[in-house]
Length: 168
Image (cartoon, rainbow, N blue to C red):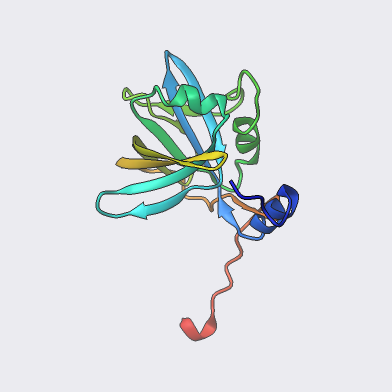
């Protein structure tokens, strides 16, 4: 591996310039809810229906979630900052105070999210200190009607609707 011309802190600040939505990737494993927060979620393909998420190679939650036959991906809404922080923590009870529901398939969803996708693992690609996990979208589930939670410049933010008058 070649050394970078910049340090990790500089690169992290550079990546923070790009806003992203925040997702919760969750499932029920051996009867226990398991989840993590991820801001590196993106659409990949329409045929087959694929999305991806980058997950840290040392994630304990991902080691458990790999066992789930189906995963729930919840696109978190702007009022779900606490849920995002809890799922991003190493707390033994990440779901304390977070309303959720689980399907028989094992997919677990955070209630009140903007969108819910029931997914199966399609492939994993090693990528540095992360794995890029390709998820096949098996079912779309209704979510809330709120705006998505946005992460930018290491802070949670809200979208502002600035419609271009010329486009109206």
